[in-house]
Image (tube, rainbow, N blue to C red; front, side, top):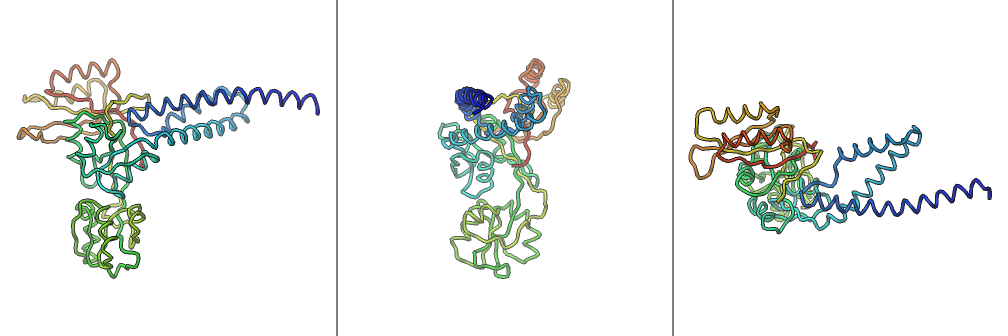
Length: 362
């Protein structure tokens, strides 16, 4: 055996020993990262953070050939770290409204793939399961591109104590589902959530189907599965069909191909991360001329761009409203603090409802 090979193996053994210790140290840090993400209701995968780590660390490698291999090494290492965090996440309890197969159930699974999803009877029950400590986070719809805002969720966020730590978009595809032996010609009546029926109104009319409302799309699918009625169809997702053993008789039957629902992740603590670039403000204004305009002007004066503005009626006060605003930027700066201070002077009630990073579709 040559002296060069002996020396090379000696170096590799020394480096491997050091890397084993550093690997354990890194994974312990991953545990700390996971605990932070669990506390604030954040997903394990953070693409922007991973890209930043790769860019920063590869800058230390001067050899262009080795740099490519090092990028592969980092990606594999971060994949292992995610897998370890997913294993820890098995205990994370994520509340959602509806039954297995509902779009909220699907969204919760895509945001938190290895979590324990907890079904709740309605939005309020799901929300308060986190308030009461029964679940760690809740996933609720806040807006649909077809039907607009989800008022129940907005009201819960405004009046409750939880914070938005993420907003994610789920593209909704409605499909005609039937029993495994059914054919399209067999279907006489369809059942689904009223919103899904409205989205597929043209298709239902074209086919001459009778329509019957259900509390949500997954409940409709379960009803079809349990009925053994070949003439009854459900309008729901492909995932729901798989769960209840139904057949997709026709896919993508909704009126508009652009049908997306935004889901918010809420937890007890308002998260703060360098990757967060947007904020949610909710407030009521004083009953004075120009109060809303003053609030909007203050936001603009401090350089914040509003990406959403909605109003909702106050439950206990007729003809009075609260406002929901999404802005580009966070308020955890001196400029943000000054804006909040000025808003407090023109608002009766002001709440920083959360911060988040705009996400692509899940």
